[in-house]
Amino acid sequence: MKNLIISLQEAETNATSFLLVRHGETDWNVLRRCQGHTDIPLNETGKAQAAKLREHLYEVSFDICLSSDLMRAKETASILTNLEIRVDPRLRERFFGKFEGMPYGFSSKGAEQEVEHPSTLSSRIFGCLEETSKAHPNKKVLVATHGDVIKQVLIDLLFLTCDRHEVVASNASTLHIIYSEGKWRVKNFTGMTIPSLSDNF
Image 1 (cartoon, rainbow, N blue to C red):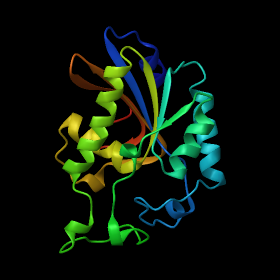
Image 2: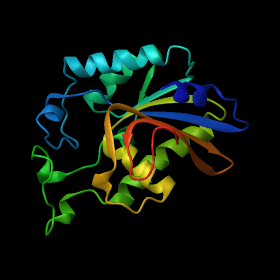
Image 3: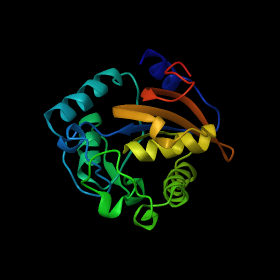
């Protein structure tokens, strides 16, 4: 976490800084059920996780807060900051269709059309972030979002070739990325498991 704070406080010339945060725990996380667009609130543990992260981030001054329009992300954002929360549905979790509510580990083989394609997910995420960067250059942006959103960003920016299920983003995990001169760069992450990488990236 110390490295994350240092990363966020470093001066970056002509760059917009984004801290992506996965929402805190929900009851469906505990039950290991796929949530997708299903609107599930934080449980008490999830609220405590967000409050703890806020304590860690107290030295960092954010200029803008964005959030998915789903309840668990908005609740996380409201705990993390006193800034106005700007809701954008493009930051929603990946859509899993009829598989939402099912236990983790389900197979979508033969029904891939039910699940949002990674390229569609990527397009909406980066569309939102790049639009924000152009409108608010050189700002620090806090983003409350979801596990598969953060996974997709990492897969795209680090050109990961592993199975996406090998990339694990825990509740209240973080990913710090910057956008400068039309290019993205990963700066730091916490609470994540990525093959061959660590929190000291």
